[in-house]
Each structure stands twice: as C-alpha cells, then as structure tokens.
Image (tube, rainbow, N blue to C red; front, side, top):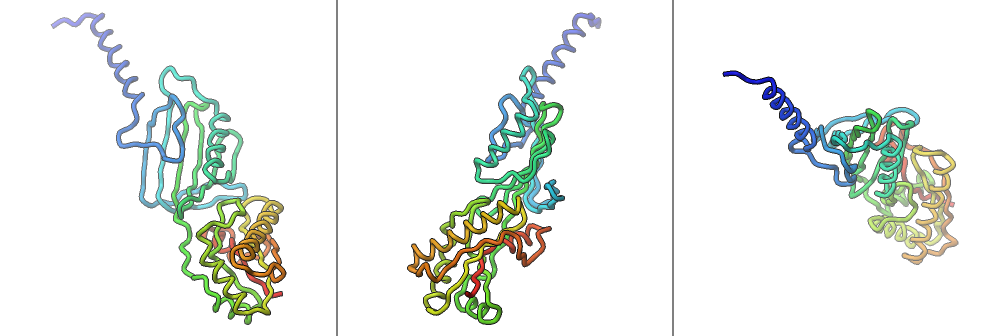
Length: 277
C-alpha cells in the first residue's frame, strides 16, 4: 500500500493540531484554588495535592517552613494568547492577597511574591512565581491550621498570675492579620476580663498589646497600641468597665515568650497582657 508524501504531511499536521488542542485543556482532576481566579487565557497544566506536606517560603529575614494541606498549581498561556508580564502577575496576586484580608510577606522583584491569609481558623500561605517571561504561573499554597487554643480564658487563673507575677497573658483576643478590630469570637475572653475587674474593684491594669516580628518594628508598635486600645474600648463600651481603670500600651515584639523563628512561636507572641498598675 503506497502512502503519498502529501498524505504523510497531512497526517503530521493533524497530529500537531490535536496535540496543540490537548495542550489547551486543563490536566485531568485539576481545579483552581478558590481564593484566586485564573489568569485569562491560561490553562492548568500541572496540579498536585497532598493532605499534609512541609513547604519552605522565603521571607525577608530567612525562610519559614509551613506544614499543612498542600496545593501545587501551574498555569501556562494558551496558544495565541498574549502572555502577561511577570510584574503584572506579581502585582495582581499581591492585590488579591490583600483583598482577601491577607498580608504580603515578601516580594523579590518579578521572581516571586509570598503572602499569608488568615481565614476560618486556618492560615493560607501562597507563593506566586511567574516563569518563562510570564508565560507560566506557578502557585504553591499551604493551608495551615492555626494553633489550637488549649488554655481557656479564666478570670481566676489571671488573678492568680497577677498576684504571683504582676501580669497575665490573654490568648483569647482575636484580630485579623494586620488589623486592630476585635473579632466577635473574642467575647468569651472579654467577658472573663470584665469579670476579673468587677470581682477585684481595686485592680487597675495596663492593657498591653504584643505582636510577633513580622513587618517593621515601627508598624508593629503602632499596631500593638491600636489593638490594646480596641480591647480597652470593648471593655468600657461592652462591659461597663470604668475607663480610668484601664490604660492601653503597645510594645510590638519587645517581650516575646517564644522564638519568632517558628509559626507556633509567633502565635504565642501575638497576645494581650493584663499588667497590674
């Protein structure tokens, strides 16, 4: 059976076209990560998911190893689609992180950006890496469950701590990342703080805000004061504590109770303290 050169060429073209068409489709079983919409004109070429893994994220002062549910997502532009620039990709993902209530932790030129979002009891870490001049977009995402609070807010234990050491740490006051609005789930701790003050009418306290060392010291100094002030306002406005009994102060990361080199350490350092006046 003779096969003409023209037929061979035609078959070759068909194979090339079918291969290109397949390249436009998403890899089987893949999906976009819910917090981030896909870049227009890009297909999902590589998708990996692990229930638990450890991933390193580059920070300004070193690396953070984050453990949790891991997603690896790699996009590539479709044939005929103009690629986005690397800077365009970086800036858009930075904006998306902030819009979701997160914070950009580190950006290295147009090579990558690293961010963290806290939502619904978990930290979401993301690394965005544009590659091949923006033709590809690599995402590494880890969902890390935040440290479970095992020490319950309790007025009696705080009174004991203050009697023994002059201060007591409160871990039940919650804020969104880089924000100073007291979250509703802080109410049990606020109620216990109010109980402590009402049961001990001669006790006057400094409300002291503490942060970890993420970000600049000057920014954290202001943030810790703003958070302490928000707690004072919540106790005065929501629980009837006299404002004269409370004084807010912020000390940023000056008084850590654990190393800031780990995420668990940072979680312990982010706290409010009651200090006897």
